[in-house]
Length: 521
Image (cartoon, rainbow, N blue to C red; front, side):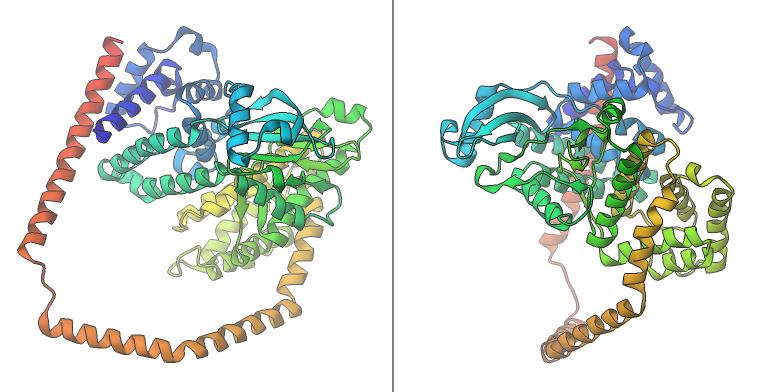
């Protein structure tokens, strides 16, 4: 029955997307003829009010109608232009996550259940919701023990079981794609859904968001002009997190920031340098730095909130990023190409010189422009497009970085239209290069290599014993052969037949449901 319920959920989602005009607004050129016919049918049931809306507005309305899980899916796919295409990803980046707030009484029950104490013992004042999104909402409160004003983020009731149910629907769609749409297999839709599931599990545990704030706060403690709110661990649990209330202006309020006397050019530089510092130095960055999540406090510092989505880069990825950025700055295209091969991102059977030629085709036109018009985000976008020609596999962590850099650079340019991305980035990138790729870094790498060698040497007796055991087992298998019992063979055959049968039934059920909704609903 779960298969049919998932199919019904998919059919309902298709109907909502059609009614809000999303399907009819999708690009039709890459679609095969049957899909184009379905798109025309979807246009017949489109709401009249959807005709004048932009595609991003239609997506926002449809996904919010479908519920929190679909909003999270949209936000997640905005970070995966390799899956949905750059055009749709751009629309999803504008997705407005504005769900109807739940009641204050329900929020109180969530907090008391999570912290195990009555609300009156924790807060002397607790407001109605001041902001509501798909996963949680925020209340303003006064902490009883010291009278400090704090923000309390409370998870939406029922969102976890709802997401688990919807996740099964997403998996059903992903499996159908992999089975019946061969062109989608290289994008690994099931693996993409796995990533979404893991990301959502982290975001739906407030303790993990609190831990992210704590880590980022420690990393940036001595950074100029940037900070995150302090977390109150005593008043935080699985279903709620309490942190410092941020007084300030949203970074989207450019006129207000200017009127308050803050230096817009300095704020733009601080934002970009802070992001690069977090990425290169720490390997841990805020991955949702849109203007609504960034404030300027009365001291002129940038304060980042809502850390439900964070990105991590390993040492290899950080070195890769720094070297390609520095290579473009210095016009060393051969080095940029070599870095891709050294990192294993481009298969070794390709020619380094040919790849360097492709990199030059990106870099030279950029260097012919005024510095303030050069977009680092656009450069990375072009770079990833070129690497596809050389069989570079999708790197989700780099795509999340690229998406965040696009947003950060866009915010900086709203503050300062003449913002020079390269001049601003060079001190941070150059310093990291000197610290991590110079003689001291070589010595550190040698030291790490020696430690790894000693660790391996200590394990040699155990590894030798395992190798000997494996050799004996392989020899025994070679003599006796590897056989499956008749019962096992029969079960495998039945399972495969059942799987194929359900797949065909699923397609017919989806078609029947959609046809009924188009002509009778």
